[in-house]
Length: 125
Length: 255
Image 1 (cartoon, chains in turn blue, brown):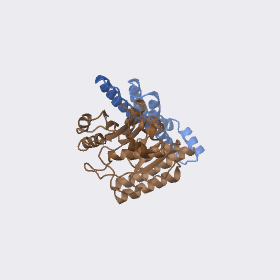
Image 2 (cartoon, rainbow over the protein chains, first blue to last red):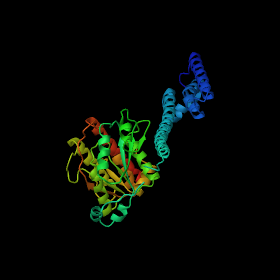
Image 3 (cartoon, chains in turn orange, cyan):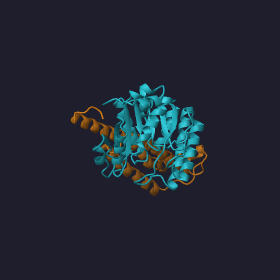
Image 4 (cartoon, rainbow over the protein chains, first blue to last red):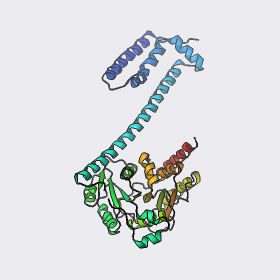
């Protein structure tokens, strides 16, 4: 079932990247620049390749079970899945923020108008 | 605020619903973006009608003196950022809802709509009340009727709305920016209003919710200042996207 296993150099490079990248993400999360969901989703870029490099037999098993010849195709497929899930969430959040921004700007203009009307002793238009 | 009082001639012409219309409070919502050259004249024209309409100019983040010119003649709601026509119109509708107006009439700030036609909308409502009354350029085909390409696009959008929704009469001018909303429509649009392509999409949303739509012929004037934001290839893109949104609104109704 297993084909070519990753070399020790590959494992070291991928593990080092995963470690450094996740430390950077962790720092940003602690600084409240990301929330836990962002941290987990962005971590997948490190976790998935590291998982495939550190556990090659498991990678081949997953590849075999999914009917895909090469494990790296499965890996990229999993990464794309995470990216799309993340993008989906970000798009929804962006749209919600846009709506809230819209409503806030409207409310601000209407409150200013009301304030002006009160200041000038008028009620309404 | 004073109540609207139509004179006797208008009441007679208005028919059965005339007493209600006579006692109504009417807000004219005028969305504007960089219309300093035309807004003053438009407000003067409204004042010259002699009707006690309430006006609200919604300045959609203009970079010129639109607010300054308008505020000398009317209350102005100034949006700090440009939200587009949908955001500006909904600001006016929210104002109408909170100030308890009976009717909210949208007219463009570029002076293309003749304020004397407001009476036509009110008369049409008095004769046959519908939640939304559109001032249509294409019933009589009088006055400025846009370019041939845009007319073809508008016909297609109208056909899509008429085919997919049943909201009363036949719609001929779904992109008209001159329309009357009654209390039910004001309450509906104060809660939700489309951000993109608001004129045709708002009709789809309204008809999906069971609101009725009617039309009355009006004449539109050509722009004297500024240029239209939808021209050339943009009008093709506009049409395709609007049709997509209308279809979405229809699917949402089915699900």
